[in-house]
Image (cartoon, rainbow over all chains, first blue to last red; front, side, top):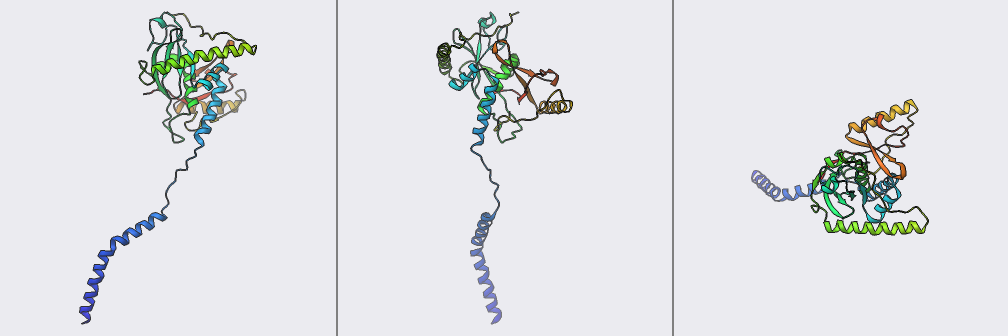
Length: 216
Length: 77
């Protein structure tokens, strides 16, 4: 009699375990998940903004007043080309003949070479300054640091930068209409600035490209 | 220049003080070993600003007030 009851009890317990085991396991896993230490990425939303503010101060301390105001008001910088025969990649007959040329520097966009007299776009130079060590979780410089890096590389060693860049025809990444509109905005901005300087009694005069060494 | 951070002061000192110059040289070499480019912002006659790229500490003008290090350029997309 006792043996039969024991056997029946064992069977009942075994059946109950079969039914309840998944629920118990799930409840245990849930409890463990609640108490588990989850690494949290403490994102500081102000960090990028503070980095950009520092970068703007650094840029301002490196470029002249005209260039700083240009970037502040228009969002890009113009740098005059200084190679005697124009850039090897992207140059034209005009640049080889000595026509003044210049670049527009946009943050995190290609550098655009153009002829100021005709507003003809010459080429897009795709260049980046990635820091693969990613010390702060991103390989991307703040916008104004990217502009400053391009400005330093262009004014410091134009040929080297152009040679390092991937050159493309105008329009690959930047809409040529938008770039021509930016050139028009730049001319309007320069006229307004000259008038303002004249009113204030400052030294005015149209901006002139730097002297280029003679070709050959 | 550091991604996500902006300007970071790496080292400062007076090149006329031997110990401080050694510190600056060591930091200069360390940055170049990390693959950074170095540039010195300058002002030319007439107020035009430009940069001078430097590859050795000896190339840094003695009166330069700073050297800026930034990641090496690579062809972008």
